[in-house]
Amino acid sequence: MRIHALIAVAGLVVAGGTSPLAQTPELLSATRVAGLGEPTVVEQGPHHKVVQRITEAVGMDGLPTLRTNTYIQLETGLSFLDGKGQWSDAVAEFELVPGGAVARRTQCALTLAPDANSDMLVDAVLPDGQRLQSRPLGLGYFDRANGKSVTLGEIKESRGQLLPSNSEVLYPDAFEGVSADLKYVLSKSGWEQFVILREQPPAPEKFGLDSATCQLQMITEFVTAARPEVTTRMLYQEPDPKVRAALAEPDEEDDTIRLGSMAIGAGKAFNTSDDAAQAPDEGLPVLKHFETIEGRSVLFEAVAYGALKESLGALPPAGRQAQGSLE
Image (cartoon, rainbow, N blue to C red; front, top):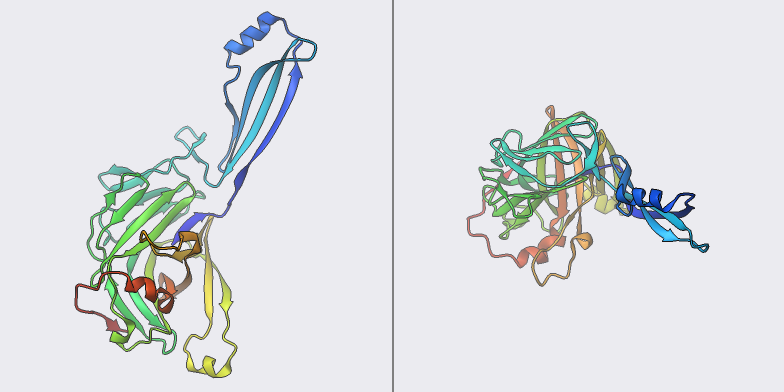
């Protein structure tokens, strides 16, 4: 799950100019003492910063000249509002406090609880002031053929660890019945939730499901959040009427989920082994589906088991007996 600001910008715009000086050398010297040549921020906002630098040059006529170079830095989440109400450079770092790990110098004020099995593991105040609280529920399988689901492993007690980068918090071995870690990665523009499988999960066939039509799912509940704006995008529509009739969910759809000024972007599943040729940006798509179930807001993130099968086979065999419950 990737939650980021809706504005996505990157690049650099550079402009320069030369201004002849109708000054005496004494006045030019005074200008130099005041900061000639030093980069100065002349304007700053949530996603941009204008930096100016004035340097001394000598014109064709031999007279002293000031050259003004200005560039605009564009970056999503570049700045945050500090305690004085001024835009300052954002820093994507957590700091440890008695209540967990806190990010204070990003546009999203993010707090992670010490234990993965908390009522509100993630507590965030979004740039527009809305509050977003969520918790992971667990991992499961869903079979698109018969519509059945299996709970593979519910979230369990796991103490968070702040990694040396200071932008990552790891909850090791965070699921019952499945050897998998939970990790959160902070950036200036938002944060991401990762599930890291350490062993092979039980095969779908152990629960009467079909690997060819099964999805591996991560399930997250949004405890406190404004009702999101959900837009469904069709990725694949099954054209064969007979195949459609045989599947409980014949099509592949992905929900775009917007929560105020933030959005849950596209996810990827990828192999992190040293010899894996697959880069994160080239990974398998993770499909999102948002549902309200008995008044609870739940996000399902799914990747096709068949597409994962080769990578899963490279993991160590599961050290536990398969567990699961059909729903």
